[in-house]
Amino acid sequence: MKRELVRGAGGIISLASALFCLQCASAPPAPDPQSARAAILRADEDFARLAQSKGVAEAFATYAAEDATILPAGANPVEGREAIRAFFAGASGLVLTWKPFFAQVAASGDLGYTLGTYESRSTGDDGKPVTRHGKYCTIWKKQPDGSWKYIVDLGNPSPAPK
Image (tube, rainbow, N blue to C red; front, side, top):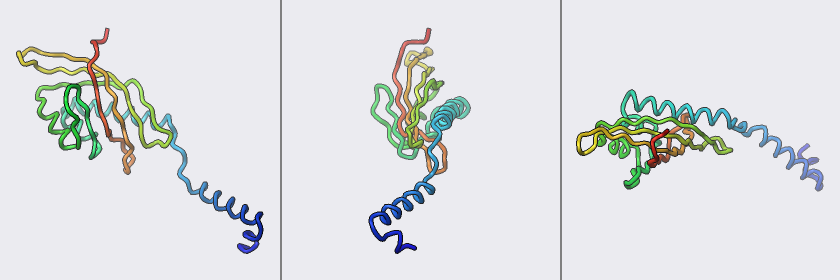
């Protein structure tokens, strides 16, 4: 049978077609973009809830990929999960709340981003409360276990919402 398939140009084409069909049958199904977007939004919302219940440092460490980077406004990049934890642990009294309003996912289904708005509350050098508002972009990567962790997070200030 194999000899008949490979004999002549028609046989080579038939063999190539058969191999291609076998490869197609074993390829994983294409990711559903709507489900992936919903998963990333859910991860971002869960991340925000954890910041309220366990604190900002713990939330940022928990949702960071091992090699994550944050790009804080007015500061140098902070690289790595433990460095990120230490960065936020040094901001005692910081209360950070946020809400994503948009998500997009790559066609591959393993990389995406969320956009959102945030509010930070802290105590100023003068001892008075300080409230800041801003917007953020978080880039997410699907992990081998199926969870989503951020690989880059950045935010910048904006006026208070009206």
